[in-house]
Length: 93
Image (cartoon, rainbow, N blue to C red; front, side, top):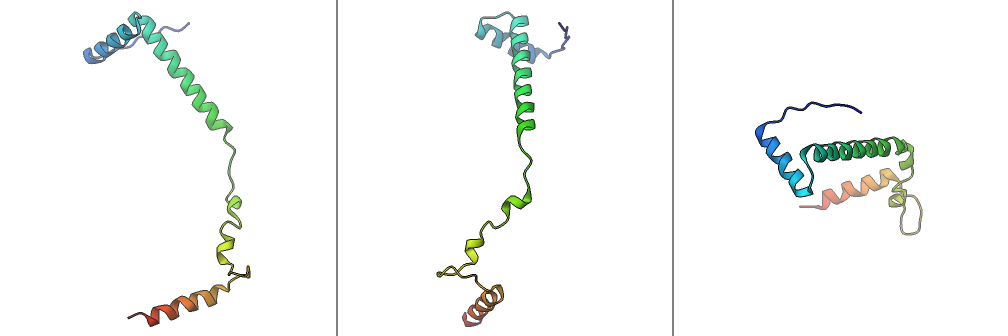
């Protein structure tokens, strides 16, 4: 068991007492419940962060490749595509 000494401002003390009263607990029991709940949330957060698999940029390989295919499924030539865009610019007023 650990002993913790906390200095509170009068406003913080009032908030703590109000929360304890709302829960039907004494201040020490309410404070203990807050601490335990916070530790459990922190532990869950740390566990979640550790369980996330590392991602690789290579997972994006090929993503959007279909955007470079024409209606028939053939690959569009990038230079031809750029040339067509430039031709459109010249036709604009």
